[in-house]
Image (cartoon, rainbow, N blue to C red; front, side, top):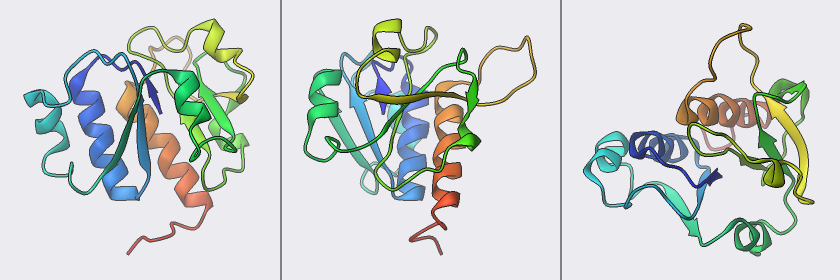
Length: 152
């Protein structure tokens, strides 16, 4: 789930990634672009028809939707103490990422639906990975833990 994404190619890359993994990309408005933007389409190539993308008007609506109401929510932040590999992911878990370049705001990190805050390990003193790379790292780890269902 991307909260208020701003950079079209990151979302386009994520669309391609969810098409490849069978995951669903949830986008929470406001978006910093129009979903028909050429940069978004170029990054997602021809995967738009193969990807599951759901747009929500706000975070409360997204997390309250029937498909996500019972899901665990993992909020990703560079300031967390636990790594994404410390968690046993389950089908249906929500992986929540914030907007570029600010990340998730404190009120979202403290949201009562957030199960845990996690981070991706990296060398100290470096800037975080971009949004689509971060989402791919964690999505593939979660999928690996589940035995890559549906993969060929």
